Length: 375
Image (cartoon, rainbow, N blue to C red; front, top):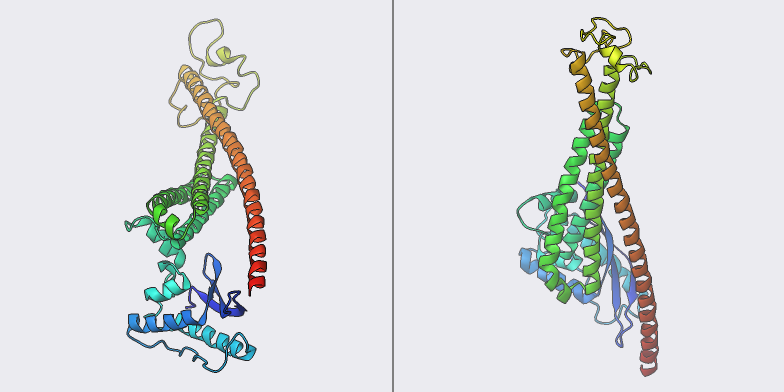
């Protein structure tokens, strides 16, 4: 089975410090995301010695030797040779059948990997789902938190697809199965949202002081809030569709009650249910009223008076269901307006972020010019 992490070192660069050194750009591709790390050769030597001490075994591929008479910054050939050697070193450890080196904390810390990606024999998505559903607690690691959020987005996407299938289903059984599937995904999404919120609250202090800034913490709060709004919207939509199905079923029963749909049935309801002249004796046969063969289980055992009362009761229930459906639609409209307002706010925040980035880039450019003058 192919490993869940793909590692390459496609390029190198040179630092801009007063004493330049070679930087190796490590590309990592995970099932849910990809990112790049920058390491220097001394980081690799530290990793190699730490792997030996933590696993009590030498890695399966040797680390490229250090050159004492040439520098990579002035020798492109040496740089390329070392780049290929370091790439093979990482790939051999990552793809080796023996996972003793992959399971060490040094390997995960060096590549900035979460615990869910260290094994090539398990699925990352299932690992995240099990972590979210288990009692191990909410995710407190920043990287695992993001992976869990991506899994949450997949759950919401699956729920949306199930709701779409339910809307296009033509028989009650398919509608019921699609509704059950959508509810299952929404329940999982609700649990994951709670876990993400709890993990963000518990680890906020350590993240802000160590890895994440205030802006990143706010962004993650917004991600959770948007996911919760989307989940609530999908639940409301599913409930509205269920209410509409009940209304349609009651309309079908009503059509069965009025027979073949005679337009004069409402105006002549008294004459269709009772004898004319007010004798009070129920009619035994009436071609314009109840039609033999079109009775339902609910009307077959009733007389004409009972059928009339049943029809009035069903019309009342229909009015109540229509009111519930109207409330759900109004709530969906309010939710859509709120989402639009949130998007406008996010757009403004991104614009402010772009301005901040441009301002910082300008300051960095000025600082580089001053450093160049000093050196």
